Image: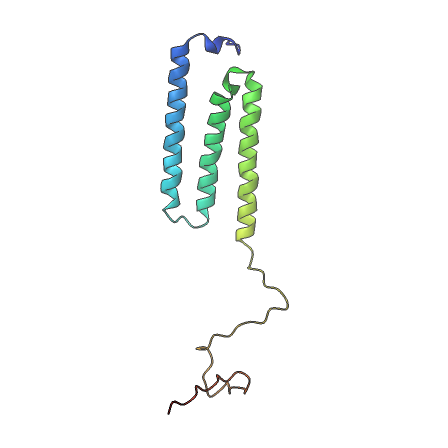
Length: 135
């Protein structure tokens, strides 16, 4: 079992680990950008949050040295990111199932093409002003 002081004994291994972690974070960033151009519907947010959770876990484990700390600390940190993602996921799923809210005092706008001109006579206030005739 390694302690938190043993991980700094081999600088080449540390540099390799950091380089690989950086490369993985950059790959995940590219996947996030690529996924933003593909329309998955309401899953776009879920995919982006899933990738962000993985990236945050990598940063916490390697760059914040949770990997070399007590294992329970790494498990708690990763579980925190996982549950945050789950809570946000359920919130987005709940909001996505609701009808759009309309204020009570908002009058519905009827499109001009929906009603024929003969069925809806114009009122004098709604009539457009006539342009002055040119002589």
